[in-house]
Length: 151
Image (cartoon, rainbow, N blue to C red):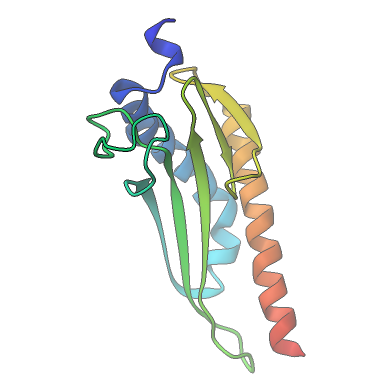
């Protein structure tokens, strides 16, 4: 099996340092109307260093060891601002679930919008697809919170 199709340090670094920042730019473009409804927002990269590799429960979890199970982005929206509405905060994650030979991208651990092999080039349409789906879910979550406030 070649290096390109197996989870390792190089593959994880590529996702963390190249794909996630590029995807964050696409997401930022899609969520600007939503972030304007809040006092503050933060979109940051995540790395799960707690979930153990089922094939090696003893190894420390790190990029260096090439055994990180999940990466992603976390959005924190703080201080919803609308006259007459109670302020609220909201968080939303985008998860890259890293398997041995491929990874999936979605908003939940069990919901994947995209599956790719490691170091496989991301096309513009894939960035747009993930950013659009994630923004749609974010809009639904904000709408649901506003509707619950109105009841």
